[in-house]
Image (tube, rainbow over all chains, first blue to last red; front, side):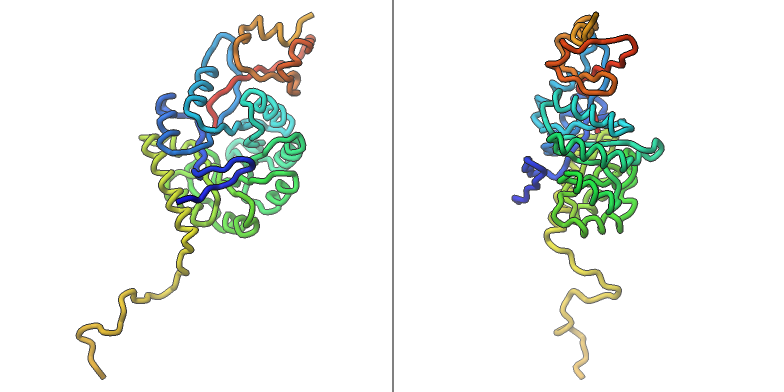
Length: 262
Length: 52
């Protein structure tokens, strides 16, 4: 089924974006990426002692896998921190794509949407292709588009919670309000059925990490999510029937045996 | 007088892929040799890592 999704200058056949954190081992991470068929993986920048080699080893593994990278600004708490992190990421990873996170609250890791819009505008003006991690708020979404974002990434539930869709109405409203903007559900999904649901709503793609990396078998779960996303997308395109309150026989009534002829 | 590049060399980052910032402002790789460090400056040196 040829049904690509366009995200900025990238045209992708897989609608799954995969995080690279918290896997049992680098080998399992690499295998999960391959099993999922994803073409974009998220990465970050962190401090490392001068003699250590963890960062180099990780970067080498990602390059070998061949996926395009989407660096994040995870953990940044101000627009200023996020902007500097994005600029470092552009140089280190040689990409102008940035998953923009400005965290406003520790318990929920809820975005600080004010800092997010401020950083998004500065980065878009500086030539970045911004993927903002945001809430499901319509007005914030409008302001992010006005700031120069061409993709939006609303949460389904708090990062790493695995709760699935907290507010289906809000996600449906966002989809209906922005029919032409690529919308990626980022954060909070736990099971493949959650991903299928948002794809059936018409979301363009799903970004996952913990649901795969912390599963008992991350490689199998990566594959399960890929199948669910494909199924959900096909279900959306196929235009589901309208639900009814009462039963309606699926087998024809006319010609039923034992029917009394009046 | 020291520079950001001299600091990187001294700390053993010379062969690594790193990003740098000084006092929360990004410093490009090509500007490190001319970026002087002063007492109390906050230097960030980062490398690729796993992320969600």
